[in-house]
Image (cartoon, rainbow, N blue to C red; front, side):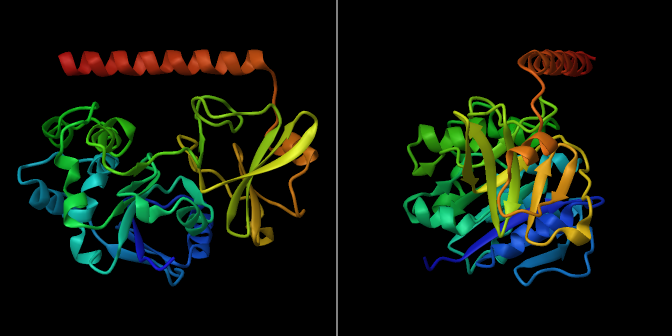
Length: 316
């Protein structure tokens, strides 16, 4: 597949201690270029990863110029709402690419190109549904589609002028625009999105989970090993995203070569060819359904409290 692809990331502040593993997974995707706009510095970068020194105020100026009115961008997290605009905001960096994308840093990439080939990305103007990783056809028409009607998270005026995060880069924002206007859009859930609700690693929403499962990265691919009907099986994903897990620790980094487990307690070297049932019990143990229901209740309570405090603050 002869297409040029660039993925854009924006990061301000101290890099997570597992950033070297993020880089390792990006390096394995050697056919894709990664542009990181950041105030950070890193000594040794792979050939396909480039750091571009930029401040948050510089990103805001680019957004102001594209959107045409004074926008809100006082906190780094708000950059996510501007991701659908990156095709215009960073146009000067994207001239040689057929597709551009955006990504998170609380994630590990799998074999991206194999999925783009398998599902024929050339058929779609937008590929993938979440802000963690998504791709857009790099044409003037497609890069301006964030202006179209259809977002259910809020109007463009609200998204670009209010300080709260609208998740405009996800299904209720740009995804809804593409669906309402019937633009070509690939939204199958081929990724491992880890929920912050449970202590152990489980997939979000209605994605299938198993009592016995563990996630790992091996030779540039992301896998889940799981037990179903007493049989150990393996499933591959385009990436794994582990939101709201803090600065996960890298254990025994010198022993990590081309494979490691991705767990609630951090990253651990994987010394066998495949994950075993013993590995599952060690790195992602299942306690009980009662415990996980309790975790869901606690998380829901915290969400209610957060929303209540935010509502009170807005009223004041």
